[in-house]
Image (cartoon, rainbow, N blue to C red; front, side, top):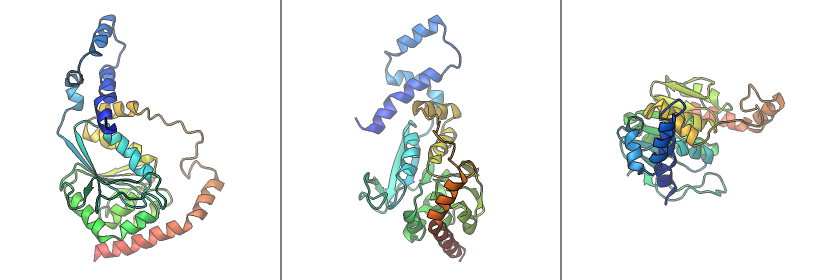
Length: 285
């Protein structure tokens, strides 16, 4: 069985059944719960239709050479836990693409720009480094994003994916966030940088660096269904961060670690600013 189908048919249904009540079950309820275990998936889901019901959700995810794999995989894992949804990984064609120079795990788009559904509930763009800058200057990609954004319910990104949205003119006048090393480049794209993990401004929802993608996707899931459903997904994935070090932001990390990364990636910051300035001028022409 495919992984997506397995996720759809198993854990979420069980968790929703467990989370339907917020108190200890009585003896009678325990018997009923035990009996529930033998009921069909369809019967259980009917009991929780108020949580899982609603129109089919369409999620369009841009994938491209040089993106960060975790920027894709984290949010995708959350999105796959939604019921009654279609998810499309989209690129110019459906050939496998490399997410780094030597791609250990290639990503295969399932639909091309031309064949992608013209309307979607969520348009999502992951980040990267050199790959991001290339996409920021790709007219075919930017045209596709503009077209999709016109009808998308939510236009979203994580990490440097917000720079791609900005290059398409989709963050002009919006509050947004990005990876801490490139967040200032948003100013060059007409956006207002906000140093928060997830930033919402009207129908634009952006996430900070890499691992914030899970937070972003849970935020979107709550909007698409409900907070309880999003909480059920969080529990299903056992997303309970307890990092071994409290160094996940430049405000918390040791000064030497911050200086090390700023020095190492100085050229990336410069490139981000340079490309952002150039593309914003084009958008304004």
